[in-house]
Image (cartoon, rainbow, N blue to C red; front, side):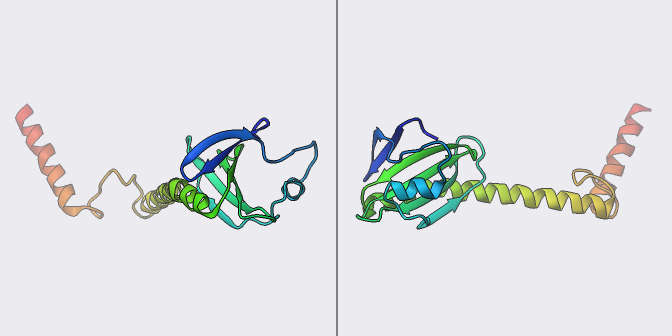
Length: 157
């Protein structure tokens, strides 16, 4: 949690502010939100993978008595920043600016997962690493490699 500070993002401008929420030992998250005047259920949430310095999650909560919002930005599933968004245009600008990081991180994570699954499946089907070739998976490449090795052996003689 941030130590008695938060941020305000107002239409593209950042300002450090006092933490908009009051945390006491043992408080449930919903209790802290309610005490701060925010809805207990997130209006919007975006998730990523939390790798590197990019956000892993953004949750947005609406203030009960006005049109402001509070965004929780979580990095690496542990470091959280509270960001006050004083109006709807600020919310939209904030999401436009930061939600793509989560989307990119999610896509990269999923692509890596798909690659890993494909490599494992190839290993199971062919009995060798996908970076190697055999006469079943690449017959033309296999013949070229055999020819190249024959030519190298002839040059040595």
